[in-house]
Image (cartoon, rainbow, N blue to C red; front, top):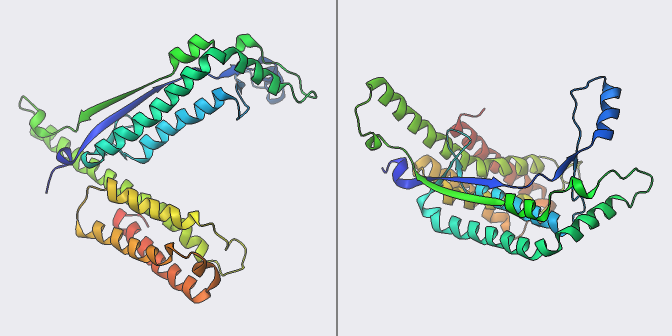
Length: 292
């Protein structure tokens, strides 16, 4: 079997953005006095209106990180993440598409940035029962906003014993090898969890009798499980029979209901059967990951 560094690489996403909050000293003074705690600090969000172009830009900025997190696996620390080699082209194309979209939005918005600031101040002033404390000087300038917004992708090889160009202590070598095994296990468990998390939520719904409180579920409950299966297929680099069986079993069972979810809403026998079968698969996944 291939070693982890032959199947994957590390990718680190660094994101920068302008500070879009302001310190609200008026509210801060009130809260500090009420709570009798002068250490409390109050920050107020700028660009609250969801329709403001600056807010739309920041919303799309968030999709860059969301895609990165959803389509990579955790490494041993909170920095770089693991990217299967087979996912490289799909990942880089999707990330570039999202980054380019934000860059284009910024390019179109910057000539009108000051107008958007005034729009935000006006939006805050709609409720005349509340004092308006936001001022133009509370906002970053267009130049500051654009300069501080940025992204950096770095691809790195996963470490391997062959990378050591000198002899290291046997105990240190053993610790390094154990950390590699741990990294692979963490990545594998995360891939399995992509299926288990939405599956547990679906089973919880199915275990509630039809027409009982909390029994209703949206189509997305099934769709989320299917999405989890597809992600697990892409991200999981563990080719052991146990993992393959878990993925195939869940896929086969969920596929029965994917085209007509109403079976699970209208037929108690089908609902009960699905709940028991899916609960059993969820239990197997939990046992495989060492989760009670």
